[in-house]
Length: 266
Ligand SMILES: [Zn+2]
Ligand SMILES: [Zn+2]
Image (cartoon, rainbow, N blue to C red; front, side, top):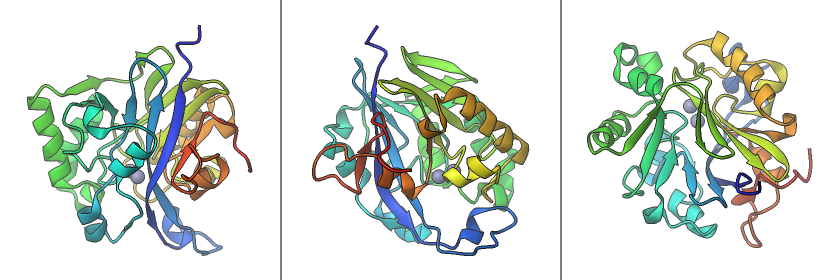
């Protein structure tokens, strides 16, 4: 059956220069420059197109002191996806860099874990440390979508379509979900922030923004089990992703890459 094989893309839209010590609980003895990139992803090729996460816009980039490289909508158009035609968006979690641009997709239904909405609207948000990566307006925008009948809730693992499954990982955010996609090279896992960098999952280290470290570490084992190999795992913020996969098409180098193709360097 070929209908369950999908194309998968990563679109880089943002960047943040920082020291490696900022990327790990306990710091980092090397203390080198270790930037984060910001991505959205897309699954194409079946009867429906899925956009995974919606990024942040220029105003939020300024507010959070991040670089917006190219607007998310431009990146999607560059690979042939018109944002106003998108019908399905998977939201991995409700952090500001994954759920902004909330007016860009007027027709979309948003796939979200029950646990993430409960977390982002519940008692944990009374704590400044826990609410720091959330933006009230983003969360309110999602609540409005619930009332507009535009949110599809999932609780744990779920199949969206043949070859596309959601997996609740938790840890970094309480209801974080990763996405597994069947491709021509095997099962690719869009981990999102279940692992920010390859280093986190390779070395069993934890990014400082966290709800539950135990679930982060257990999540690494789940992701390794779900992916066909270590090279089928796509971290949420690693600049290596844009470097080691081939461009989606000529001219999109450094902007959009194909994740269902073999990585070119490791
Ligand atoms: Zn996050
Ligand atoms: Zn993130």
